[in-house]
Length: 513
Image 1 (cartoon, rainbow, N blue to C red):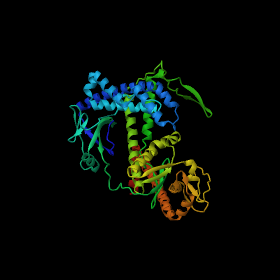
Image 2: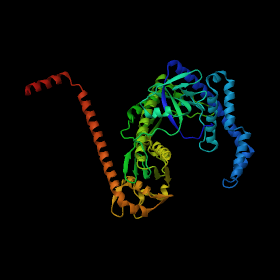
Image 3: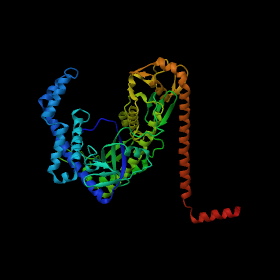
């Protein structure tokens, strides 16, 4: 897409949509989805033709270091021979839509072209090795449509969304400075999206504005170096004059009981209405007992595609489950954004270990789902770079911060050992110590001398952070015990006593009086 390269930010505004407009929007999104799937199929066909072409095969044989310009030229020649370019896919999308009268009536020229570009970029990920396959969109996964400019087609003019004789009224909160800043900025183009919230489809318009986003006074950034240690449930940071050990998404509502209950309902419904799609139950030995286990679902093959029967109750429960996961995810994201802003108040040059959150997911799946450390890391990187800073990752094998002492020697610790006992006599929280050492890493190399010389000046703020973390942990435990006590008290009070017991209890009270 030929968008200008000036800085951009997004302003999202909810839309007021009646039933008639809702039906029309769904029809247009259905037209856009079908056009996208056709374009994606054509893009994959042309990509395979490009791969099999002679210029492409010759370019693959060239070395990556030598003849780089020649290889680039051969790749471009292979693309042009197979008509595998962004412009060609845009032309294909336009001609395909024009051949179908109902799609042409629903979509404008710019939306057709952006759909072609979207399909082209999805297929490009395969040819560049970023993914193994593309995903054709079903109705529930096609959630956005956008234009190319704010001059024609899908537009936002006079504080209204206009799209081919359809005018949508946004719900504007004029007291929100973020919304007002977006409305006062130039709109490059706009995007329509929908979300399924509280069992209803909600529509939004996203304005892609030119310039920098609105910055709230409390979310300022300063220049400085921040060492950070990312963990599964918390993050430790050490700046010039401040240190902290902050938990991810505290008091996050997990809805674990509700989610487990719905998952069991869904599984029972699928097994009852699709008995032929499951393997027979089998007996398995668990310890000293023999337990009857449910058979796994059969896998479809090329010649035998398995079809599933889903009832209305199943669909309703599935929507309830999706809504609970959405609430949990949105809460975790909002809390992690607060942590990002807290760290950036003390420095915009972030140094941290190159840890693999994907690797953690295999072992700590539920904890990663509830706390979202990967989202925190990507959000911190984005905001730090937008603030003129940088986000630097260094090798964990070369530095080994949690094992390194102030003298430079390395002593392995168990993961359960959360306190660092240094050979020079002092002790510090393991994560805070790693975050402190991260400040003194330069080009994958830890400067132990600088870290040992600076430690006496940094020790007070590290001890304060450790003391504050212990206090917060004690408060959380106290609150948890208090909630358990009140819950049990309510359960006891809600239990109704038999009539004869109530009478005898009243008689005793009267007698004591």
